[in-house]
Image (cartoon, rainbow, N blue to C red; front, side):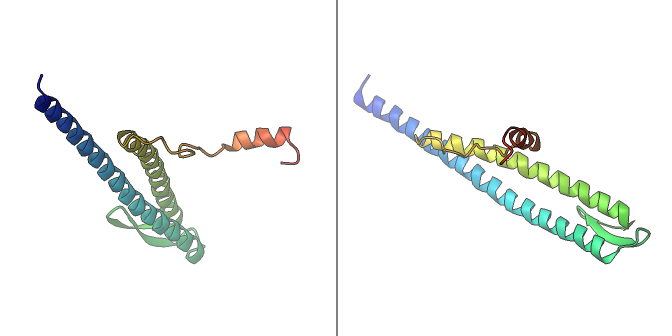
Length: 140
């Protein structure tokens, strides 16, 4: 094998690594934009729920709401239920994208030959775990 063949294969390998790094980086940026859009939708849904509860205290009143791209007139309890379902779905989508984002960032760091981010994979304690700690540590 000649020196030029070895150089060509190493260049090709380097190009593949750079292309893969760019692909992963693009996916990270796309997920970031999705998170921003979902967070905006989550805030708008939260505001709508609060407005309905505050402005229409009677349960027999009807309100106009948008769910997705549909405009609907619903009774106040049904409208709140639909908006809450939408909010729950948005939360699940955000959680899924954040988990995917962690994997993509670690993949990118691997491609760049950097060590994984420390503390990036931490998860909050559940209510049961906090309750167990409080039961064993009264001053907590």
